[in-house]
Image 1 (spheres, helix red, strand yellow):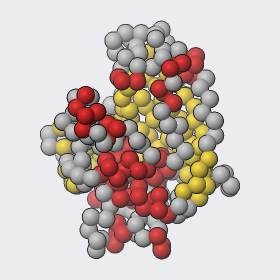
Image 2 (cartoon, rainbow, N blue to C red; image 1 turned 90 degrees about the vertical axis):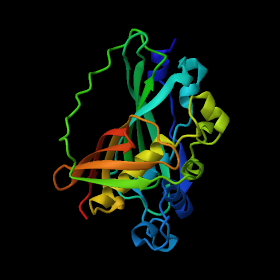
Image 3 (spheres, one colour; image 1 turned 135 degrees about the horizontal axis):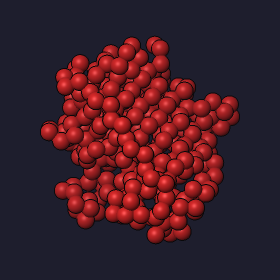
Length: 283
C-alpha cells in the first residue's frame, strides 16, 4: 500500500549539474536530428560553433532519478506509467550552463481500487548563477497498482474535441538507434536497451523513451508549420501508445491561432500521442 503522506512530503533536494555543448548535441542526436547531413535546419542543433539548443533538452536536466522506487513510498513500480508531460520554457537555454533543479509532488489522487492513482510531479530547472528559469514542467504518473488508498478523487479530464480533418500532416522516421542514443541523456531504464527486459514487459523489442517521442513532437510539429524548434515556449501531450525505434510517426496538426497548434501522432493506425499542444515565442 502506498504511503500518501511520505509521497507528498518527499524531499528531492536541489541538485545542481553543469552541461556542455556536447550534452545538448547528444540530446538532439537522440531525437534523430542529423540524418540529412545537408539539412541546415537540423545542423544548427549539432554544430558546437554556433549551437542552438532545443528547449526540451531542459527536461533531462537535474532529474530526481528513480525516486519513486524508494521502498518507503510503497509504490508498485512495475505498474507505473508515465502518462503525460507538460512544460513551459520561459527562457532559451544557452549552449552551456550550470543549472539547479527543484521538485515537489503537487497532487496525488485516487481513481479507485483496481483503477490506480495519479501523481503529478512539478519540476523547475533554472540557472544556478542567475536564477533564470529555463523550464517549468508537470510530469503525470499513473500508478496503476496503487488505487483505492482513500485519497481525493482524480479530476475528470475534459477532452477538447478536434475537427475531423487536420490542417496538415507530417511524418518523422524514428531512427532504429534512437533509444540507444537517447538513453545517454540520462534515462538508463533497461526497457529501452535490453531485449529480455522488454520481452518480460510484453514488448517485442526495446521501446523508445516517452520523453524522446515528446521531444520529437516539438521538432516535427514546429518544422511542419515553419516555426523554429528552438523557439518553443510550451509543449504538452499524453502518451497514449508505445513508439518503437524504427517506427514512422505521423503527426496530425491543427493550427491554434498565430502562436500555437494542437496535434496527435500515430504509428500506422495506432495512436501514440494525444492531447498535444505547442506554442512558440515570437521569432
